[in-house]
Image (cartoon, rainbow, N blue to C red; front, side):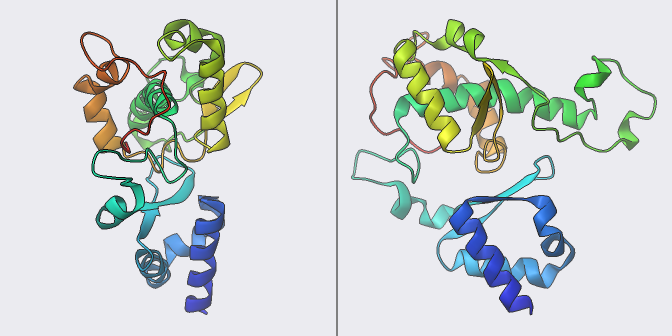
Length: 222
């Protein structure tokens, strides 16, 4: 039974790309099942991608398989297995920084949007807030800040739609919220350091960095 369920979970994760954690309660309660799923994914160069702060489980390439998956030639790397454009990759870094970084701080401090910044005496005993709509971005405000740097209105809209299609974000009524893959396949420990060290500014060509991101050449994976 464990082998059959492990095969089912691995297949669903590969074909659907993500699953809600609530559909995988049995995997998180059964170490043998978890290991069996991991073994099946590892056999094809993948591993489970999730964290305690996310409502979803996804898959990503093993470090040992990244070169085979993403390297196009000696000088170029694909941004993702979906051939994400460089502009979309830049916008992904921006959206991630604006949604996941403040959301993670709220989760660490056990603060929800309803608290309005107020601390509570039993804060540490509260559950970690995981609402996908904890942080809302205005599409208009995002364009005002970064649209021209990303090539103008048409390209900005194309990149935003690309992120929505790939389940990194959800667009609704001019608002942008977290998609199922934004806090799973993007590695927090790596990207947060790169943003703090100024890699985002370089990616956008700010302060002597890259020349800009209006072209569609492939970028390196985050």
